[in-house]
Image (cartoon, rainbow, N blue to C red):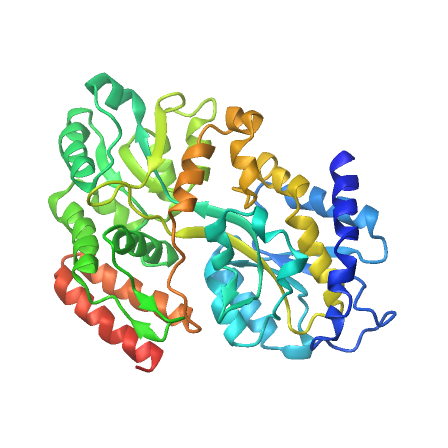
Length: 423
């Protein structure tokens, strides 16, 4: 296939850069001693089944460096738990290349589970700029962006057009439409993902960021959440639940449940990832041909999404680290990145694909997604990210259910994050 040949030519250019990489802390090689040989790629469940075909292309071109795909559970929490257990096994680790959630990079790097990578070996200047920051820790590259994502506001375009209204750009507009048009058309107004899990951390961070605030600074060493912006952001979501334009059921929703509610025609607005737009626009969907997508709103205009997606990293105990790095270069090349979108329905990291007319015709949300990614920010970086996220979830749950005011919640979160960071 043409894309396999092109990727192979690109990989040849990396040989000089990667030579000697195998000596940077790898285990003794059971092959020729040059850091090349079979590898495993561990990833969360491949829901669309595209990755097997992509890896078959690599294996045909690299019979002595075959990659074996290890699919872990679909749940990010379960995938994290299995990777965490395996990486702590040290030399007994089964995984060589890790497809990790972007917010795990700092934690895995700080723990010494993944190795730094040579920047010059990867086409970082061809990526959407914000995604590269998710792959760095303490000034060094520890992973390579593979898939990106940003939250979008999905909306019922047919209803807004009937009312002669543009999509909301501000929280005030979103709130007004949700309060008035939702009941008029028998719909709930707005929802995100508010069950206490990682999605709630994302929704909370987006609200704080959109208001101009932050949660942590200095790679997690400084707590910055105690601010008027954080109170405003958390207050926006808490007010929606208290006033009813966010349905109480949203407190039990993750991505899939909220997507289904929108797709079934029960919601006027939904914050979700682009995959929800794709599902809702498919033929046979009750809202097919009736939806649109815009960047998330903020207090005074477009807000800030949290960057989603995944990065590819090399285990510190990989037996064949040069092959692992070459595989990452292959997976982040233009031809495979195109398949990430067309076969996997996942947002690629290569910037030029977002301007491709053929791809835009097939995926009309791409220009909006590009705008959202470019304005997005990573989740709080911390070597103790799992504890940070749990603290955010617990505090947000109490704020959203009215057990604490936004001001009380922010003060409590600042205390709990200070305890996590040791400050």
